[in-house]
Image (cartoon, rainbow, N blue to C red; front, side, top):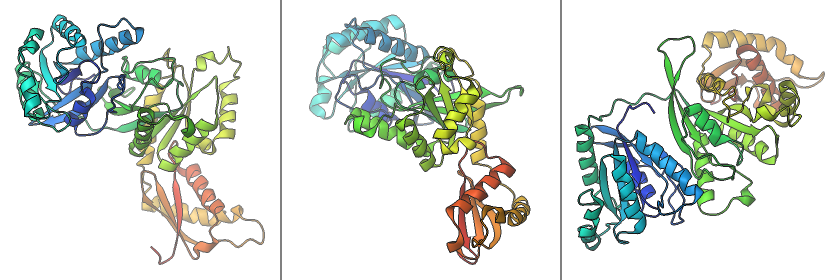
Length: 454
């Protein structure tokens, strides 16, 4: 991660309120909060604005360092990864529960890390609970007196941040201005198609736990990456990648954590410039892929179709890439204009191509054709639009065509009578616009307005 900001990693055992605190600090309900142990499985990044500083907060999974389970080893690797990035560690305990064996194990682990640590006594929601933070048993951890905070009601959080900012400044860790995001990309697909592996390959580091068990990712994850433009020395773009949860059939979505994660993932689509629709080459297109494609179209975001696990194409007798594209064209209406990239996320095959596609699609969504060019094109359209009608059919009287908006590019036909405009004619106009101007990867909206109408 490019150290544009100082970094604080939030660590602790399960159910001490780390994710609630994380949400409080960044001012957004980004991490899913639940009493169910293990809700947070991946490291989660967000920005806290305090005083004159921007601080990157990392929410980590709850750890039980007294356990020998393999999943705990995966989570510990993620916590190690977060702490490697961190300038300061916020060690969270539950003040009401008192010192637990898992807390002691975590304290020993943090002492060995040699990282600066602030001990936070969370759930200090009232004066009686805050007095519990003064118990001498907390001093045995070796991190001084705990700072009483309440992630639930916010008390003490400002005092903690004041201390944290002073420590960060003493460490020489101060924030620089965050770069503007040039493209926001939501990675979507049903469970276990390789979305997390793809995110890791794009980011160049293990940001998300990758598992063969579906539903490992419980909530959307953001990764801001700096992409050096090919052939342009020193020129770079910043792309925000969002790894969403695997969205499966609605009837199979469990209530609670999974349903919250699915809703958050769908919300991410509304803020995206581009969706990477990931398809498992060995499974092909099913009902869920078609529904996800429809959802992407409904949100009017750009799209790149990613066929993952293409390294298994020979083994699975999938045919050539052209064969697979023809198959996709029979399944998706938008295949005429959506880029298709064949990759192997685990090996990195063709993954680098995706970033240039993301930037291009984002640019196309923002593209505006000049009024002069549109006027010339409208005259050409008037001469050829009769070919879209059969003999004897009533043809619309078209006066002109203008581009009225972007994201998505929106075009308005000025006509004599809207009632004569059939949806097929609007699709005909859309196709002619694409023939003339491209607009690869982005949906277009073509609408009709009667002359003199609004």
